[in-house]
Length: 125
Image (cartoon, rainbow, N blue to C red; front, side, top):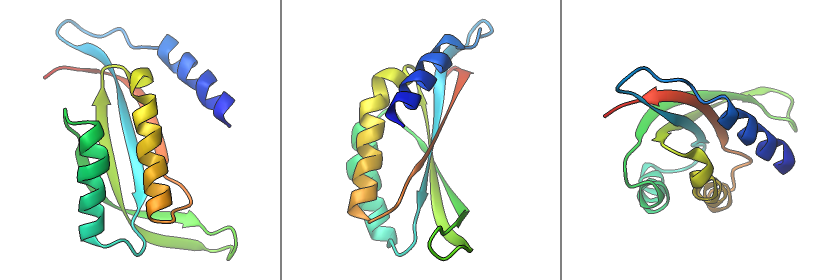
């Protein structure tokens, strides 16, 4: 799976957008965190110590409701979720920090996965 991620990252970087004047290329990265059984205090602590510490330039956090098929039970589960959006000038350089934040969440809260979605975008502040 890691090989696929490297190949995808190389392909995605080769497809960087041509941005209109005044906008610069960037990557928009969305991380989807299931919150099943995780308290608001624990979420805020993780957010501050893991994500804000690694990405102090900023992010946006959305409340969401996730649905996924539990492979053991075979049924669709509904779970409170959070989506964190980061706009990064160089996602390849941030890959280690993104992977570490995901691994920390999975281990700390015994989560099966964190969905990571990346898109090439144009941005300006």
